[in-house]
Length: 361
Image (tube, rainbow, N blue to C red; front, side, top):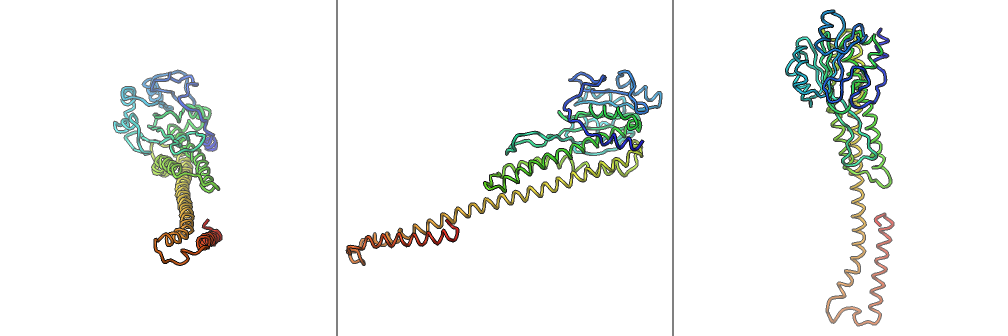
């Protein structure tokens, strides 16, 4: 069973976006309840039932569990489910209004887990205003006989994940905690995919900065750092909840699932390390870019200073001979003017040659 669970957990995740309506129990777009199903021994039971009928069926038979999926429910749409499952008001408020940090909270009879989902925003070329990372949220209420997933945002559909789990009854047979683990694994796998795509952007910026032209702008580097900060806010706070799920025994979590939460925690640590490395690399790239700008400015100043030094010679000579005194050397000499001009040109040529040899011009 465990080998089958491992196989199901590591299935590649499809990149389907939006609400998936391909399953027979999907609700029409615009309604909060995306799916409601009863699972017994890991097998989806026939029939489409509302939440109250589904949970009554499970509790009367004392077998299986109910999985309800919602997408951006309003307070009114969520009210019936809250009363039916006895969800805590604070957790319900977080689930309805979203914009929460990743966390794990314990309430009487249930766990409330918040995941930040991320998606890489495709773009032809990184600019100073390019959006690189788009975030959403998935909240999971986990009880002994129910699991409720609440999704916010235009990505991170759980329809494909549900269908994958339904194809491996051995995993779903472990109960609601198997769904919680599959959601966590999907979210963290998306983190790995996004960090791989972000690395491509960083490599592009690095190549431009160190190219011959050196055209990599600081604006694009700062934009990447801002998007990386958004990714860090989604990833870093999840470490605590994953460690708790991986190490702390909980009534709502099957002990056979705990080991696989450790695998998710390990992958999360890898993502965190990559983000830290990316941030340090961007700092180095930014410093290199600023150093290039400083060197270019110094070279410009050297060229300007060299030409000023060259032009100072004729300026000085002409300034001296521009004084209106009657008794000045060579002032009334026939070859005085040509001699001074030759002297100016020769001196300027010597100075120019010296600067050229030293790399100032």
